[in-house]
Amino acid sequence: MKQDMILILDLGSEENPKIAREIRAMGVYTEIHPHDITADELKALPGVKGIILNGGPNRVVDGVEIDAGEAVYNFGVPVWCADHKGEAGFPADDAEREAALRAFVFDRCGAEANWNMENFIADQIELVRRQVGDRKVLLALSGGVDSSVVAALLIKAIGKQLTCVHVNHGLLRKGEPEEVVRVFRDEMDANLIYVDAVDRFLDKLAGVAEPESKRKIIGAEFIRVFEEEARKLEGIDFLAQGTIYPDIIESGTKTVKAVKSHHNVGGLPEDLQFDLVEPLKMLFKDEVRACGKALGLPDGMVYRQPFPGPGLGVRCLGAITRDRLEAVRESDAILREEFRKNGLEGKVWQYFTAIPDLKSVGVRDNKRADEWCVIIRAVNTIDAMTAEIEEVPYSLLKHITNRITAEVKGVNRVLFDLTPKPTGTIEWE
Figure 1: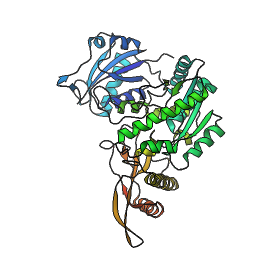
Figure 2: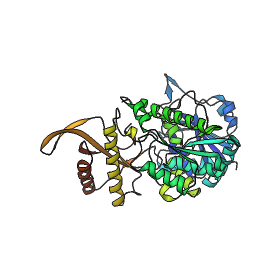
Figure 3: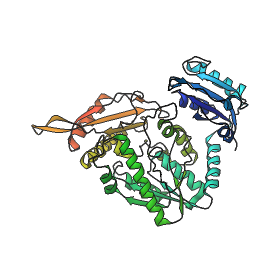
Figure 4: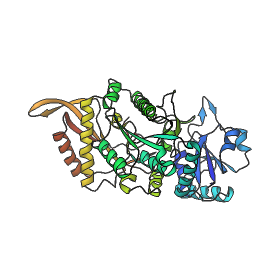
């Protein structure tokens, strides 16, 4: 179904995702593109009814204030030159901004509220079938929300042309590989290949401390594993990924600096042997969950806690060692168990432990003990672009601390991270 679109052009604003989500909440589709979009690129975008030029603190690049080209102003649709600071016609309090956005989207642009998950799924199924034809697709199935929703959508679109590969890279949460096999192979009847690549990944990561290097090693090694599996299967032409919109936005644009590269955006090797299938790449996290619900996935899968592509590799801070990685895995399992028992599992959006490559002096068995500290992080968010801290009861934190220091080998301290996003990110790396 053809849907109307409001195009947001990035002129240095850090609020593009917020505006995009507000317009999508009105039932109108939006996309964010660079300010220097060309006339041909504009013509290739279907259903554009209006354009917002969204300025902000990063509008001056190399000493020059950037602006859109003539192609934008001459495109023949209404253009709103907006500035999130409250200048140039963009109201700064929420109610006024919503009213102004509605007036622009519906009154000036004449857009229809014809974007919803049912239409999105129908469009993506058509696009996937057109892209793939009768060929085969390989999917990296971690069992997380994004890859699970991609799997469900692709099964609906191309059925047995999809092969799912679950790679145990040694960076998964406790019990996760076994659960993925049980749910997808046994319950969902997916074509699932299980690959034990623990030693392969950890050997590649040995001694690598820089976060971006770790992410890129993990991303590149994933691709190598899939290439090998594809050669075994024969006839695999496509790689499906659970890339979502925040992955792309946080990996940087021409006027917004990268927050961090994501393994499925900035970590792909240049000699990639597959064409990519990324049906969720324009959805925010809450929209991915809504898509999963519309596809009929169970709540336990749709509302599963987010987990980064590099897994515990970005929670074992610094150079990864097997003993500290195991400590992250065990402390995370304790945290998740206690949150579940105390009614926080569905209340808190994301919670996990991280362990830096840092030891401090402590006391164990009446002796000095130089051991690691565990950091607990618990945050709530809607779209993963901003996040607030969950106020975990002190009595529960104390109980979790007692369990971790008693049950997790090599840990003598537990810390609670109180930093929202921004200034922190959700993950530590």
